[in-house]
Image: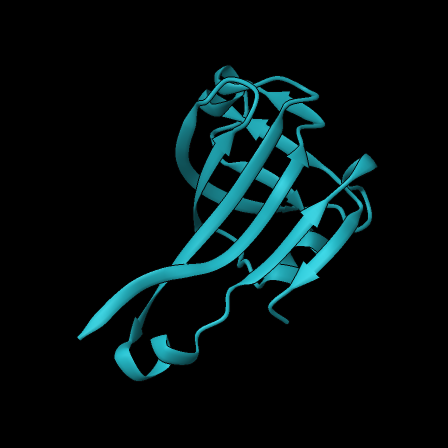
Length: 120
């Protein structure tokens, strides 16, 4: 049997911009993606702490060190710069893996700098 568990989480990511005319997705600074193991085009679930919106999309890498979190396409209607997001991805794991599974989680502070790093 397999269960779906949290794989990656970026908590309290501040939205830095939006681009309605982009085809879709969420842009995330490549350094943050690497830190939690997110892959280019990986499906994510995001929740906006400011307005309660939840949405699924995929992640694309932003410039390293930019601290960018950019809502693209239709998702730009679900938040605005300054809103806080929780960005999550999930993985299917077997029972044996599930017993020792640890997600990769970071918590961000001012300017989307990592203030807490768990699960590495």
